[in-house]
Length: 213
Image (cartoon, rainbow, N blue to C red; front, side, top):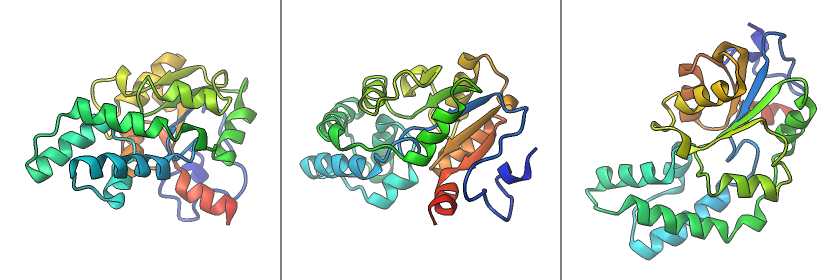
């Protein structure tokens, strides 16, 4: 294992370009907060829906649940606050509120640039907690719809992050073993899912801080 890619490496990740070891044949990217700067827009959509229904939810809680599908977030809110919100209804409302903000979505350039550089060298996939209705539209908006060999969303697996299912499914669609994949994430639950899948993980928060700092 390349020590620069090890999640516990004390020096962090290299400040410019990643040096990828030869056994890595596939790169798997989370979407929200990794390939695209969507988290502030997701929070704005949540604020709109929460105000409409009086839902107790905070920005800190949203970011802690990065990568968790909206329906599961609503289920957790129900459990935490003894509410009976309908997950499907609230998820549709939140999705609609987010899609009105789709034109504001911008790419996270260092990660998109890495994917473009590796196109044709390694297989590429997206593994997102977003829905099948939204993620393809975002990829098209950013001009990335033809960049990836596989796109896996919350609708393609049973268990959300931090379960490893979405990353394992991405590797399966790429025709690769998990150990041949390196995955990029901005959320703690997603990083946990990557490691549970038996893959090497890159915390893009640390990488971007080093690259852009």
